[in-house]
Amino acid sequence: MKHLWRWSGKYFGYRNGNQLRTRDGRHIGRFYGDEVYGVDGRYLGEIKSGNRLITKRSGKMSRRSSFSPYARPSSVNYTGYVGNVMIAGYEDFPDPEDF
Image 1: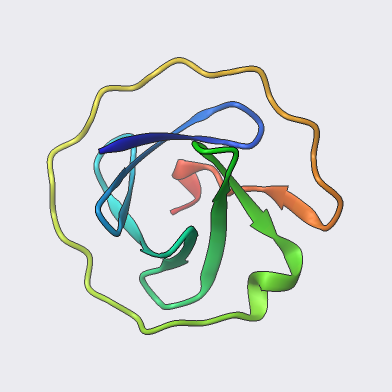
Image 2: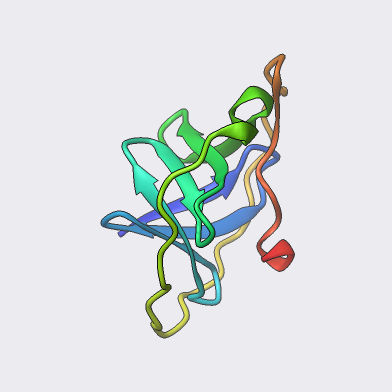
């Protein structure tokens, strides 16, 4: 299990194998390498700097297969980090409450 933060520094949740889960344990994404796609198959974002989630604007048109999420208990909420300077052509990964 690898804990992940949004580019802005807010704790998001964790990666367990190829699953992306919010801090409350909801399975909202599937990883293909470092890119993550939502339940409906649309691109959500990717991992940069080892443990930060960010969304490439031009990647929003990408799609993969949809999937059925697996239930799992929630995790512990971690404190945030200082945010990173935004990279040109990217935006912050959606907040867990957006799912």
